[in-house]
Length: 400
Image 1 (cartoon, one colour):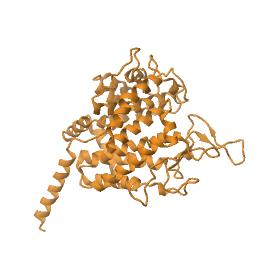
Image 2 (cartoon, rainbow, N blue to C red):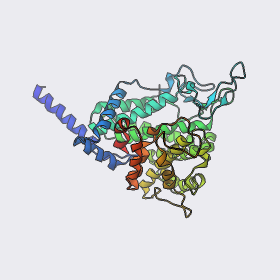
Image 3 (cartoon, rainbow, N blue to C red):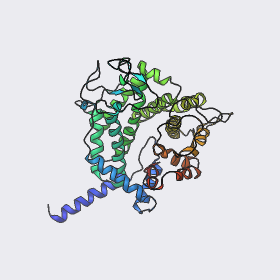
Image 4 (tube, rainbow, N blue to C red):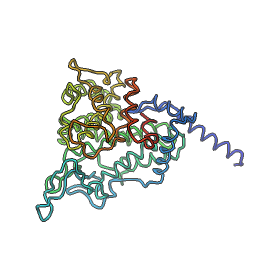
């Protein structure tokens, strides 16, 4: 092949990749219109977005070099399980200082045991995998560069598809409590990170790297995991939780159902289940008492709202407006968010309970989504209380 022919072929491949990435993405939680608008603004070199975009691409380039993650990379299997079983330690449980062997572990709410984030367990690697997969998928959508798509596909393939490395579609050993339980239903909240995997998979489907085989295997895995969530004793207990655990359970089931095509299940959750969650968790003044009981009450207030926002985003697929759904006594998602929003900054007063460890940048996406759905810039104005240099590089303004 001549140099000219090769150059034309490369140009054609690049243009084809850009055209595929230019399609409106079939996302579940993220707004396709926001993604498309951001892509256009980046093409126009919008100066307001460029600092965040450059930081985002730098993160995507870092993820390109990261090794694939897999549950089999831990040093040993959980007691009674295999290397393919996901294993984690309950983060607020610590060795018992009053016993020689440190057992049974004891709870210290709000104090994270650093052991839970070590490579002995799978929590950190699943979090990295999910975050990197979505970052790379979005980078492919924004640039059309198939290298990003290929890496993202590989990460997802290793975690849920490859029979040699895949995670079993169950969570029997999550948030273990040494000396008490090999696993608990509370660990189900950790697979909220897999919502990012479903989103990444949807974004990547038009890419050259993704294929029907990958879609089939990923769909099969989430079908099995969703079945486990609904039918296992752990899943049923988590679904009955009356705090953020219950909200996040619903968010996961709804997203996974949407991904595998069980839209009737997702519809049922957001039209019937979400109103019940709102009524059982949010007071007429907007407070969420079960989150305020915690030693990190501000964190858990926003954390629960994040799950409610996901449910409201899914409701949009069914032309149901949970963003504005309100009980006669005024109880609503917006009422709860309006109470919390002015307190996003670390130094903002918080009169509702103990603050504890808290990172406001974990929740900036909520403010961008609120500004869009409520057509009220007041919400993004609240973010101006955060450090300006970090705020201008925050990727939430690109994708939410």
